[in-house]
Image (cartoon, rainbow, N blue to C red; front, side):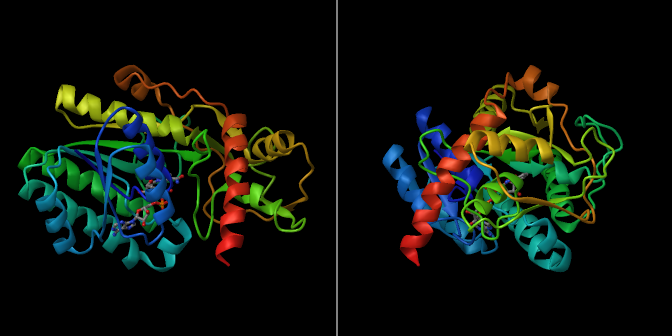
Length: 334
Ligand SMILES: NC(=O)c1ccc[n+]([C@@H]2O[C@H](COP(=O)([O-])OP(=O)(O)OC[C@H]3O[C@@H](n4cnc5c(N)ncnc54)[C@H](O)[C@@H]3O)[C@@H](O)[C@H]2O)c1
């Protein structure tokens, strides 16, 4: 049985679908603080899923979980991930993302579970010194969120050396899109990600979408990011676990498409996919936004055999269809 922490959330939920389709039995552990019980209900219709509501910050919840289920490996998503919030409330991030993960690792050691795949982030790199960013790029995070994740990476290396706990750290770049059957999707509140926010602006009575800065040193002046489809990303987790089972060694991989898309390009593609004009204005730059962030993901391709397959158009199309569903869910629960 595989434990997925944070499986009621966006990426954890999609990864759960991938694992269920491959025939795995799952137990999901989630506090539902930013995740949704509706995601769990959907997952239960797809395959064998048990759900435990619990919190990583409470060691007793973890003890109960590990005592009740015979867990073979852990896929660890549970965390907070609002970069801005982490700057004014760092304690919340270090407590949950770092201390919470230590609790999880300790419970694993206690119950002799020695394999974990961890959601890390390109935010551990900080300001890029070069692009595309490979795994050897220096890690100097510029916010507590990135630092809370980098600390976990380091703790995992120490837990390997001391206790033989093997970990795969996956450093995601930007994640987009949703399940092609539109059963689950991105459901953050507040939403800080570009694509859902462009799409949301079409539901709010012609509210103007803001592009922050068009004077960066990039071909069209707007920031460049690397958008990987969430179903492709989910697949990488299964490949990572299979690699861990096969090789029994710790490693780290970037997950991105290696294709930088500018904000303007994403915006134009949204208009094209939706077949409508979206009101837009140029606003001043935001502090701390690097001009270009995109991955060198050669290592994941060659070592894990991972290949992102879905286009940015597909990501935007599924994200839009999901957003239509979400607007209905929100209206019905109001
Ligand atoms: N979304 C992105 O673009 C992106 C990029 C890089 C890294 N990540 C990382 O991927 C992971 C998943 O991100 P997401 O976008 O799916 O976020 P999400 O908020 O949708 O999911 C996180 C889930 O973890 C749960 N959770 C949080 N703290 C918990 C705790 N203490 N105990 C139990 N459950 C807890 C939440 O309830 C939620 O269901 C996070 O670790 C995030 O840092 C996300």
